[in-house]
Length: 350
Image 1 (cartoon, rainbow, N blue to C red):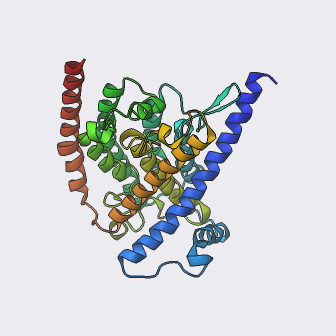
Image 2: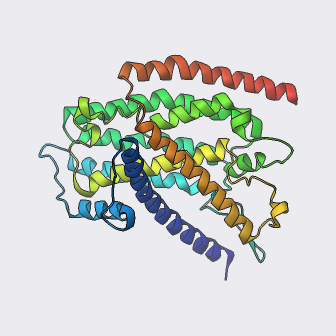
Image 3: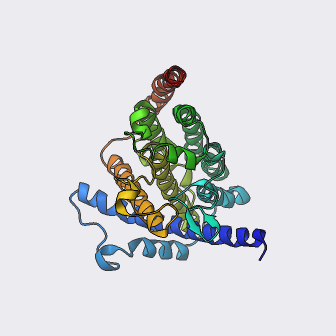
């Protein structure tokens, strides 16, 4: 069989697995959100549908499918329908370049654990797609012909502009240290066993900035200004119902998972094992090593998802002026200084 056919088949299988995995992770996030918030507030949480309430997220989706799709009379129907599709599509598209584990050698073929994880501009692709993701929320607010929705969309645009700069600058330090824009190269650079080389130790300031901006990029509390129920009724999604409403939340939880995955890849060593693989008898390119790497990677992502949810139910929402001041007057100057100091350090060490 021609090589191109094998490549198409492999990419198709990976794409289906990734899309299915994103949906399952969104369901898991919904369940964790409810259970952790219930624990924080001394409640029980979901406990009726399925064992320990584990099927509640699927019941929610079934309920949303059965709800009536209501579109305001004066809304722009085309863009009103396009907005949730755009948000979800971009949230999924980011995963095209994300690696989940090390490679597997099967015969003379090397299979990477991801759709296209070894692309040499993976970091730029992620920054580009996350920047475009705000269009879905902005279009939702504008097309609804509702002033509260419009304000929510505008807040999302301003929030993205304010924090995207600091997010991009926080990653420049990693690019300077690694010398590559490939996510595989960034992870492999942290796998050296001659000392702690995780980027969280080499770039602690960049880690903190990226973590804060990740909350702002995903519109999670304490930066959930585009929704802000006490101020904007429901924000950009006020005029949405049924599965369109559900698609926005699916995109939000997909983005939350994406942010956790990126923090693990950029700063927490990716799928790095706590001990060298050789001591465990695992060979490079083996299925056993790839499975062990994926397990470690998944555990790190789960810990960060818990942190995202914990912060949401612990810290009150920022005021809009506080949000802008933090982005422009604090994070941006610190991120610029971090880039300068990192560049000087790399130049001195070379």
